[in-house]
Structures are given as structure tokens and as C-alpha cells.
Length: 446
Ligand code: FCB
Figure 1 (tube, rainbow, N blue to C red):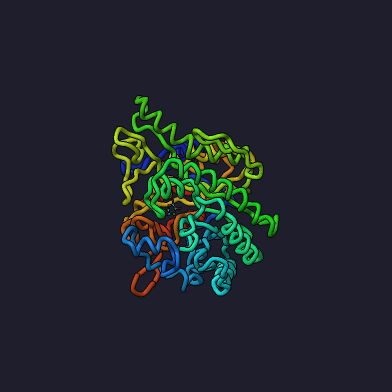
Figure 2 (cartoon, rainbow, N blue to C red; figure 1 turned 90 degrees about the horizontal axis):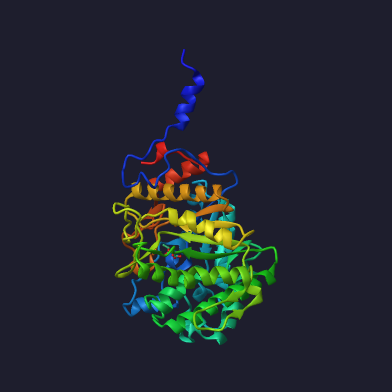
């Protein structure tokens, strides 16, 4: 009789690499356990989901032909049904945002119906069994605020902080989790350094000014929300870009990646850890209440940036690395190492992956992508990063800034633009299975 134990041991010890050689190095070959109590969420933003003719800077830029138009995916009208559908997958957290231009369409004039609608959204989410996480700034500004110069002018900060406090006060009994802003450093990068997004500024000094301002606003916004109720949870949100040289033996590429990293990640992490803002060529500035102006670090991750001979691009470890529909390579190790780096920089601060997902039209691709990144998250956790949850970007396909409604589809759920009818995709069913089981089973990865 064969010794039973040996057979069992062999079964668990056997590694079953994925059959696709491009994915095999990225996907788990053994089951990956996700801890009990792990937070499963989805993330979205107001303008990307709601769209519509709101008085904001992106609607104006679309009119001027500089960005795609955004009819929305119908969330504003049918959020309640979306919440129910998302909750049916076993998801329990919903990150959304407030479109400031709806709430304050003209400076100083609050639209209480819009505020009430957002309050009703928080209630509807809770009724469906979802905890709302409410973000107060996600890429768009009201037209009037943009016209006054946005965050770049210090005298405008009071307008934003007044809105932050008003929104928190109005929503606080209905939502307990807030964010001051989404990806403030990417906002500075795309809108003030690269000049790709409104207000299309490309100026190093403006970008450094803005870096200082968005950090100061994190400190002040955190304080404003806590002034409403100190028990509210305020999470930061930043996307990890993980700059790397394309060729690690190339000194110029290494230097370019390091310079970018020092500004983009280094400034933010040091500021949150110490309250000090250090920018090249500027006097260091201390904002004491910026130190630990967060209760949770929201870590977004999609892919890593490579600095190569032709400037920045997408980083791949191997030439056959899978590529998404926005031309970015899949590189889950960036998520693992990034989580560990943030955990080391901010000891004692819990983390959530506040966005992760991929632009894809192929569900096999999306499932593999999510599986690979969840496995990377689990590795970071096993190595000591205190990661409490994962928010998939996004629930229903939505507007993707420069790409509009295109093949850059990040949703677990598709929608029909004519009828707004929702259809869960294969990835939604797969993720629901992972949540139910509390583990990723390699045999279930297509
Ligand atoms: C993030 C943004 C979000 C969405 C995803 C794909 O960087 O926060 O609005 O566009 O990328």
C-alpha cells in the first residue's frame, strides 16, 4: 500500500505553472489564500461614471476638442441597481467620488439637490451592503474654479477646503470613509508637467508649486474632514508608478528613473512621514500637520514606468510580457515591491490597494491580470506589508480620460450605451468565486 501521506504531500507540493508561457511567470502555480476579513471593493470616480453636461473643466476641454466627450455610463441615474449588482458578487466596499461642479456649480452657490443625491447614494450603497468610501477630488474641477487658476493659486485653496468640509459635514453620518483627493501626484504630472490634461500646463516650476500645494491640501483637507468628526477614516490615494531604467546597466537611464522617483514617490512619502516637503532647488518647507495626514494609505497600481533611450514608456521584465489595450505591460512585481516600500516608509499605517485593474476587451486577459496582482498583493502581505483590502478599478465600464469610451475598458460589468443595460463579465463571476472561497485557485485561472 503506498504511504498515504506521501501522495498528499506530493499533491500540495506540485506546482502547476500556467500553460501560457507569457503568463506563467506572473501567475500563481499554487493556491493563494486571502485572509479572513480582507476588504473587497470596487473603485470609481464621479465624472468617469456619471459623465454628462456638468460645468467642469473636462466638459470644456471636450468641447474644445482636446479630450474625448463623456456621455457617462448611466451611474448617476441607476447607481442603486449598480450597487445591488456589485454587492451580489460578494464585494462589500464601494469607492466613489463627488463631482464638485454638481455640488457647487457657481462659486459660493451650493446645489443642495446634488448634495442630497450624493447622500442618497451613500445610503443606497449601505442598504445594498456596501461601505461607501467617498473621494472629494478626482481629476475634474468646476469651471469657475479652473477659471480662477485652480490649486495653483494659493488664495483658491480656501474654496476647495470649504467644499471639502461642507461635503464631509453633509455626508458624514451616511459615509465614514473619505479621501481628500485621488492621485494628487499624477494630477500634477499630467496636468502641470506633461500638459496632457486640463489645464494643459507643461512647466517644471508650476509642477513643483503644485506638488507643494496638493501636499498642503492633503494636510488641510485631512484636518477639515476630521473637524467634522475625528472618527471618520481618511485614506490618501496615490498611484505607484515604480520608475525603473529599461536597461539597468545604463547609467543615464538609471539616473532618469531615480530623478523621477525622488520627486514623484520620494517627496510624497517623506512629506507624509515627516511633514517636510523637499523639492529640487527650493527651500525645504515644513507643514507639521502634513505628518501622518492619513489613516490609511490607498495604493493604486496598474503597471510600471520604464525610462529608456527614447524617454518614458512601459516597463517589461521579459520581451513576451502581456500587453494591455493601452499599451502597458503586465508587471505585478511592481505592486508587490511598491506595497513593501510604502509600508516601510509609513510604519503603522495600514494599506489598501485602492485601485487595480486593466484596460482589456478580453476576459481571459482581465482574469489573469487580476489573479497575478492579487498573488503579488498576498506576497507583499506575507513579507510584512499590512494590506487590508483590494478595490478593483472599476465596477461598470466607464470613461477613461484620454481614451474616452474605447477598448480601454476596465469594468467587471459591461453596459449597453443605448439601453444602459448592465451585463457582468466573466471576470466578475471569477472574482466572486475568489471572494467566496477566500483564495485564488490556479485551476480556475483560464
Ligand atoms: C487611475 C485613475 C482612474 C482611472 C484609472 C484607470 O490612475 O485614478 O481615474 O482612470 O487610472
